[in-house]
Amino acid sequence: MKTSFLTFILFCLFIFPTLLQGQSFEGVVTYRYKFKDKTGFLKPKNVKKLHGTQQKFYFKDDRYKNLLNGESQITQTYINDTLYITNKTVRAVMWISAAKTTGEVISYEVVKKAAKIRGVKCDLLTVRTSEGTLEYYYNSKYKIDCKQFGKHNYQYWAFCLKMTDGAIPLKFIFNTKTNCTEITCTDIDELNVADSTFKLPRGVAYIEKPKRMR
Picture 1 (cartoon, one colour):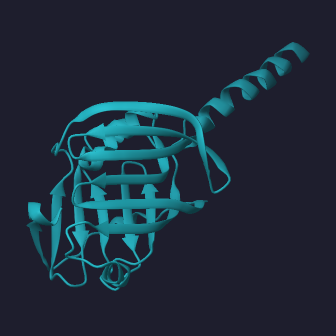
Picture 2 (spheres, rainbow, N blue to C red):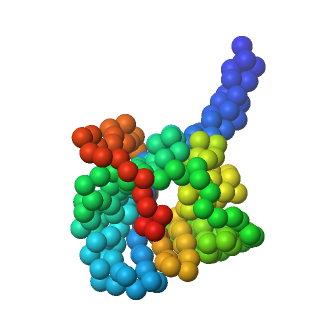
Picture 3 (cartoon, rainbow, N blue to C red):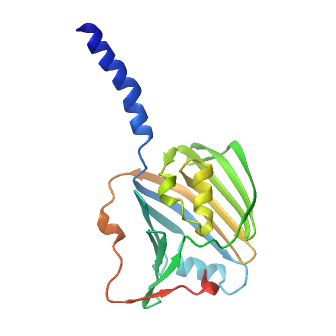
């Protein structure tokens, strides 16, 4: 009897941590947001006013939604390999097929313990692409199922998640010829995200987002 009980305890010690490690992160990640328009169309003060300085990502299973706190109230909702974008200044929902490739990976490099983000030690994945350079800081403690985002090629998410075994970025910098986007984690909350978070607007037109606006 004692042997059976000891075997059960050992089973719990070895199996339960494995199950927990395999769980996909669900919750909200808050980032400090910076965007620079290199074309000169949007001045820094206009970016802060329209886009804001904070971005929140809601993650659940194979979906996410992010919101910017600027006056334009821009959101992006990822469902079934498609990004749906809302903007207070546009009376329609614009969409992008995230499965389409916009460029190609030329080279990549991983540097261990490259920086600390929010007190968390992060590795750095640097990716050189045909569009520009991408820096992806991550820690394996915060992971989603990379297989569920296997076709998310927009901004090379699928590649980055594959290379990091599903680790979400704690800092992300994408620098191209026309713009530079930078987000840095300021807070992480693991919590249950309601399915209603990902509901899309009704009664409005859905149009493909023009390439010049991507």
